[in-house]
Length: 350
Image 1 (cartoon, one colour):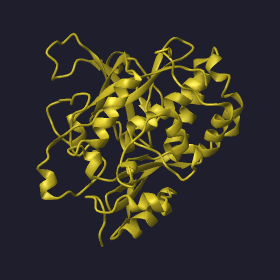
Image 2 (cartoon, rainbow, N blue to C red):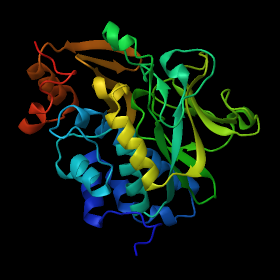
Image 3 (cartoon, rainbow, N blue to C red):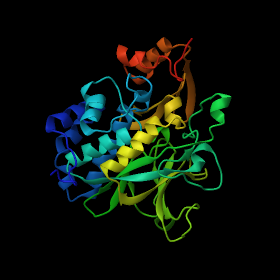
Image 4 (cartoon, one colour):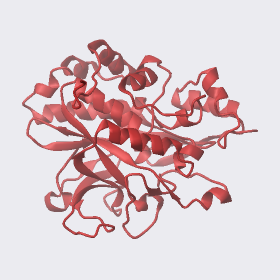
């Protein structure tokens, strides 16, 4: 009987290929397989920060498998994810459960004490007020505050959709847990965040440019008991801005079967934003520093670098969108994948 606690891992050669894909600096590659055993939390944090940021800059957040494929399904199997992201070397990534399941397997292979947990998206992500949160499958659309996506009037009537999130928790040498997320698009945390209550400690970390990031530990408004606290991820674009809540999460480990159900629902339910909108987000590095992002929403491509937004292209046809994916994201679709969008709601028919 298979051990139910078994989690897959990658081979050394697979890890080396992954490092090459994300252009991890050589000094980190040399210590990668030993860093998890280090007694220095600072050394581990430096490595994990670089690993996370290079992943974000080279493995896009995208939901193209739902649209550009014959099967229109999403696999979170470790081998399938490796083939898609690294093995095929066509610039592919995935949405939250794909990228974070893949990244979690990378962390475990490197020897880190890691496990995945579930998250609830905040209503405030789409500008709603009131401090509410969705369930493990529920959120209000659109799910990206930094994205502008024009939907039809019919789509606007679908006010509620279902979307959940996952993040990885890692325990470092000091015994402190950190949250690592590589699957929340342009609102993603860009470095490991300690599970410490910023309201008590004042811990605030820097994101891209003047952006600030923090975790607070508190109950959420939809809960009936004020004693049921969750970790809440918040960000703001400068020190003078108000904090904006992105999502909350628990420290309870989610099992592969949990993610299997979450992934199936998120990728197939026709009221889910991902099933009728195309999203691609890739962060941009300047040297070894994150400087901004390139974003595709539907037919539009924009780039934001150090707070300055530039409109790059409006795609009128599938040919133009495929070309934009290759030019701005270095993401190449096969001819079979391109045929998969024909006759779907997201096809550009110009």
